[in-house]
Amino acid sequence: MQIAITGGGGFLGRRLARSLLADPDVERVVLADAVPQQPFVEDARLVILKANLTDCRAAETVAQGADVIFHLAAVLSGQAEAEFDVGMSVNIDATRSLLEAARAGGRRPRFVFTSSLAVFGPPLPPVVTDETAVHPQSSYGAEKAVGELLVAEYSRRGYVDGRVLRLPTVCVRPGRPNAAASSFVSGIIRGPLHGETAICPASRELELWLSSPRAVVQNLLVGAALSAEALGPLRIVNLPGITVTVAEMIASLERVAGSEVAARVVFNEDPVARRIVSSWPARFDVRRALALGFGRDREFEDLIREFLADEAAEGAVRPA
Amino acid sequence: MQIAITGGGGFLGRRLARSLLADPDVERVVLADAVPQQPFVEDARLVILKANLTDCRAAETVAQGADVIFHLAAVLSGQAEAEFDVGMSVNIDATRSLLEAARAGGRRPRFVFTSSLAVFGPPLPPVVTDETAVHPQSSYGAEKAVGELLVAEYSRRGYVDGRVLRLPTVCVRPGRPNAAASSFVSGIIRGPLHGETAICPASRELELWLSSPRAVVQNLLVGAALSAEALGPLRIVNLPGITVTVAEMIASLERVAGSEVAARVVFNEDPVARRIVSSWPARFDVRRALALGFGRDREFEDLIREFLADEAAEGAVRPA
View 1: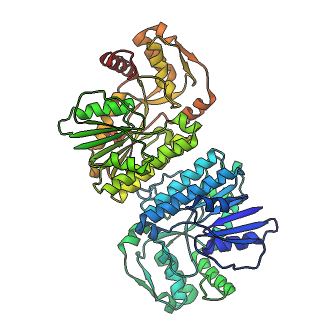
View 2: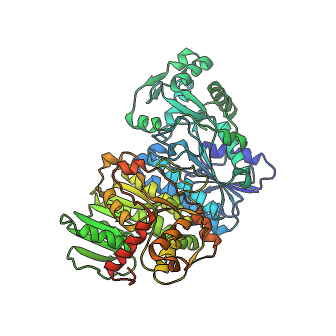
View 3: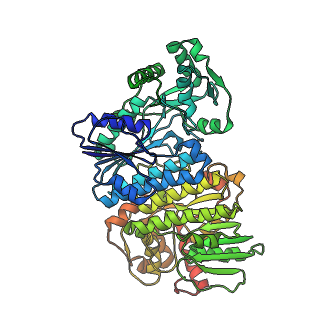
């Protein structure tokens, strides 16, 4: 089995590659990213590729021979809001280029597209399901919603066998803050654990819909392994998460790491980040996802402990 | 007030232009179409333009100076299904070019985008509302759904003041059969009235959601006149229609034109047209549209009588 991962320079892409390489049936993992990457594991099956997917020849190189394509590459929410044309180009045009490349290859690969709860916005029902209408309130959300439609249409036509997985906000992300409006969600846990003050631009009462990196990587693998028959005509799945308030996150941090650590979170409301993040839903009915075999985290303290364990395994506070 | 109409060579575009030119406040109506057109009315304010909107310079020419843009240009459902790349290019890329041109002009024009009930598909609720999730089952529907998201996003960012009007199936269309999968819906009325046999590819029991051309043109004008405040953050409106079965249509035809005319409808099921058309919903809750001031037809017989009256006014069976 040959695999391609776009946005493979991100931490999810690398963790996904590591999990895939643990499977002896995997013959090749192409890790493509617009940013040059260093190999992070010794494995002859791992191919590192610098590729700008908005160039259709690059997209063809990535898609070539792939049985499964994980399309993780994206401009994140903060940047997409600040740089509209860049977001449109990467989040829509590159997705289409990759779908076209997969179509041209004629192998009908499984195409796992990571979307986001950012496709939703008010007016929202109390609980979001896989049948809730999208109503994006950010450029990132609008672009992901377009990508979802493209993946579904290319699947309906038989050009790819697509699966759209809508990720909860991933927490705790390792490394540095990123260009997502939700970057603070990991920042208020990671920063204090690293001895740093962290600014929270949202209120304590804000509810979030979170998933651990481990659950997301596992669910990407589940998404790729699902048969088209099991998935049915609805190609979109809201992945399971847990609903937590900012206050509960800080209380969990205090229980795991002590009150001195938890006191490093400082509230300083930022209207832009706040508007975007508070338009996202935090309560989902994920019975369909669970029935399809996707997994979920248990409670927020576990996410903190997993983060600490993963950091220890990967060499402490070095950016992952 | 300066107006641009794309797809202006179609009969809706021309009727819309005629209505607009009746308003003395209208200074200019640009009627753009990829196909060359003849002027159909003597009016110095009417500008006929041959323009392929996938060329961004052509899109700029169309959008230039416009206070209101009616974007009607589209590849219809039958052609979009048969020629995927043409549909993507016209229904998505040209829409985006026009939005970009409007953005570049910096005037934030009202942008009236005609979408379609083809964005919906099973699984459907018993009654569709403006909040029902799209689930296109045709390339045309998928492309229109992408266009809707683009218009909403360009509006949210303040580049245009967009309104997405989802049209019911328009009946009775004048002229010849077209490339829409729903072409038969008008054909089974128009053909028999013109003394021709008409083939119905769908079953008698199929329910349709219909609007007269008059109601559609009137509703396009209402859509353009609505304030952004009245519309609110949800830019999409399902236009009012009436729910009729094929059997009821033929019974109405018999009442209006006699049994000899109605007997000219021949049933011959076509699986492709049938699959597409039967995926479209026929029952809508349009209370929001009615509250916003959009109008609706009364009953199907009126649609037949209006068609006959419009044909008589426009010179009998000459293609409109």
